Image (cartoon, rainbow, N blue to C red; front, top):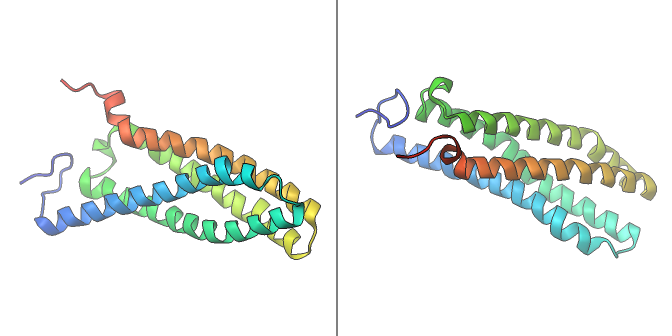
Length: 173
């Protein structure tokens, strides 16, 4: 029996289970990353605004430590599961639906933005917080906020493409 979208033959229940696991890991990674950004940007940021600067910056430091560990997991799992599915489900890029090409490009842009965030403004934030340089930590938070805002928009776009991309491009008859 041939796969529905790729050239690879279905090799029984084990392969289907692997595809299901890959889809689940891919979706969960995206949900955790994009949902975490939404929570941080739309809920936590306004809620901590009234706090005094030392308390607010310390809270952000603890939040980032935990959240960015999850983002690193997503940054690894999303490309790994995505490329695995491209080859296992579609047999490579030639049969990959157009929206998934866009999702891949947007995803890599998100990864690059996160890497910049991690090594530049977040690095400055950690050093400033450790040195109790609150003005520098505040400036770094503003840079982080801008990058997270951009990545949130890109992430929401990718979620929309993943959910409805094929229906936006291909009309079903």
